[in-house]
Image (cartoon, rainbow, N blue to C red; front, side, top):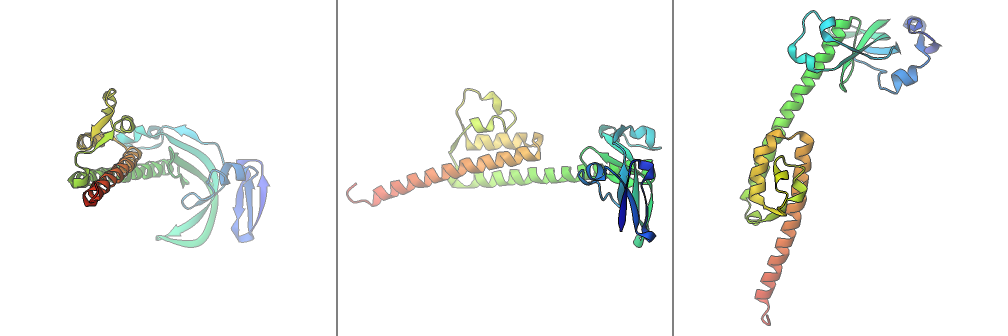
Length: 236
């Protein structure tokens, strides 16, 4: 399929049956590089700059929680895959469309602006709900992991340096004059505050905890080896 370059959005078009496509001269920088070459069922040929839109001005019905999202939308000319009965007919239809996106979520295209905005908001809401479920699961798993560590005899009575955790665990910044903290106390503080922590914060915390406990365990095993070596040494 051959393609021609055009200067204006309205000149972009396609005639699939003739194998001809007319795309905007800035297609590479405005569509390809921002990864907008394929948006849902649409293949943009030309696109205008994104602009902020108020969902209340586009949708006949809107949900209160949608107000917290920043919606961006633009006009475009696209090649749309034709679907009927849930199946692709094999036809491509060229025409005007709207592309909407919410923050950094995947964009959605539709020939009607309200449908594009509604689909973008629904996708953002679904992603937000999925992230909330994953975060809740991560918090439960982190608590269970800490409970298992506390139950291990080799970690009982260990003190850990408090400095690395002041910026990771809410509330520990108050311990400005303390150099170390009992592992059990640290574990209880983490469990109390983990509901305020996001995914990255929890993962950074568990990584730091794993590194510190690995060092403590190596030191403990070294001391035990030396202790038993002295017991077995008849000259000691």
